[in-house]
Amino acid sequence: MDVLTQLLVLTLTFTQGLCQYEGYDYDTDYEPDPESPYQPPIHFHPGVDYNVPRVPYSTECARECYCPPSSIITMYCDNRKLKTIPRIPSRIQQLYLQHNEIEAVDIKSFVNATSLTEINLSYNKLKSNKIDAGVFATSPHLHQIILNNNDLEEIPSPISSSVERIFLGSNKINKIREQDLQGLVNVTMLDLCNNRIDNIKGKVLSRLTKLMQLNICNNKLYSMPASLPTSLMYLSLENNSISKIPDDYFAKLPNLTAIRISHNNIDEVPLYMFNLPKLMELNLGHNKLKRIFYVPRSLEHLYLHDNEFESINITLMCPVMDQTHRLTYLRLDQNRLKGPISTFAFLCFPHIQSIYYGEQKHTAGEGQMHLIPPYPPPEHSRYGDDDDDDFPQYHREEHGPIAEEDEDEDENDIRGYY
Ligand SMILES: *[C@@H]1O[C@H](CO)[C@@H](O)[C@H](O)[C@H]1NC(C)=O
Ligand SMILES: *[C@@H]1O[C@H](CO)[C@@H](O)[C@H](O)[C@H]1NC(C)=O
Ligand SMILES: *[C@@H]1O[C@H](CO)[C@@H](O)[C@H](O)[C@H]1NC(C)=O
Ligand SMILES: *[C@@H]1O[C@H](CO)[C@@H](O)[C@H](O)[C@H]1NC(C)=O
Ligand SMILES: *[C@@H]1O[C@H](CO)[C@@H](O)[C@H](O)[C@H]1NC(C)=O
Ligand SMILES: *[C@@H]1O[C@H](CO)[C@@H](O)[C@H](O)[C@H]1NC(C)=O
Picture 1 (cartoon, rainbow, N blue to C red):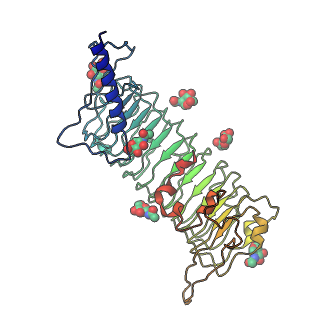
Picture 2 (picture 1 turned 180 degrees about the horizontal axis):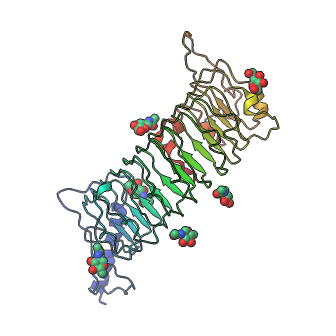
Picture 3 (picture 1 turned 90 degrees about the horizontal axis):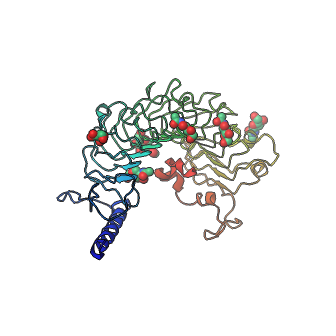
């Protein structure tokens, strides 16, 4: 090939590389100019001789989208004000369609898309009654389907049984139907936060036999979801209207590592409810608890702020003082405590780094706020200095408005565990 052609190919490749970088930067407010419809920088037309070695795949790309030369399996169609699904070449495995205006998906759209492993359709206007049945079941390789921030009222079904992660947060889903999660034997993560689900009955969840993480925060649940699969490790039910946990609810869930049920109406839990061998984090903040419960030995972080505790009976938390409890952080602010908890706490929980009392709630008829000396006292605290290099993560949480609690994005994101 001549020098000019070589130069041209080089320049084009370089330009494409740049565009890929710019077009896929979520941190900047990428707003395509409405006047000039997005023009992909270049098309490789099969059949046209570009003097590049032939690859055994077609390099065709939907006109509205961008297929980077660095990855022939990826097609970027995000942020383009698209109203319909573009033509998807059958080689495409990763399809990015987020931030468009797509309402409808008809059966033809995905008919050739049999290699897909990942679909990102978040931030569109998907409507349940405009999605044909089975559109997300055409690829036997689908691993991840991202449908958050749409207008879905139902879980689309069926979805390929190969799927492992399903994101359905911030939709208008108000129920899980019998057929919805059928056959999804490989799902490990299901996110349904910010929807309108008020009740999960029957065995719909127990079929997800590999489920590790279930997020149903910010919904309208008035009872605990029925039949959680025994594989579950992370459960997020914050900000619902749950008032009771059935007595033996967690008995068949030995792998639970984190439970978050803050911002509910729970006023009582049986003494041994959380006796789970792997539980490390328990968040029951912003409930109506009055009576403390047994703390499993594995538990490291316990959040009980904004409840109705007037006292904390250490004997109930820790009936045997064998120093094997791993608790390091206990949050107790916004209760009705009148004094620090018994010093037995430090015998029971030898690893405790911090008990956060903060301010307590006023009790009717009392003008004065109860001020409880913090533990550890600031001047004796090994961690008194914020700049300390060894400063443990959990201790940081003690200071200021607890970020973990007040920034919902952080709190809801149990994904951080992975
Ligand atoms: C699917 O592939 C067939 C055969 O190559 C083609 O005729 C048809 O237009 C394709 N459909 C879509 C929606 O891409
Ligand atoms: C899907 O799109 C959303 C919205 O832009 C983005 O935040 C998310 O990171 C994308 N997910 C993946 C796996 O690319
Ligand atoms: C589930 O995952 C396993 C292991 O990756 C795989 O062998 C199996 O084919 C998957 N099942 C389905 C229905 O895709
Ligand atoms: C609780 O969820 C509702 C939606 O169900 C939402 O409007 C509200 O902001 C959430 N509150 C907190 C504290 O997250
Ligand atoms: C619990 O986790 C262990 C280790 O990851 C795993 O082998 C076991 O199958 C899990 N138990 C259940 C009931 O899923
Ligand atoms: C704590 O609970 C134990 C067991 O119920 C009880 O015997 C004890 O009196 C309680 N202690 C306080 C200070 O209430």
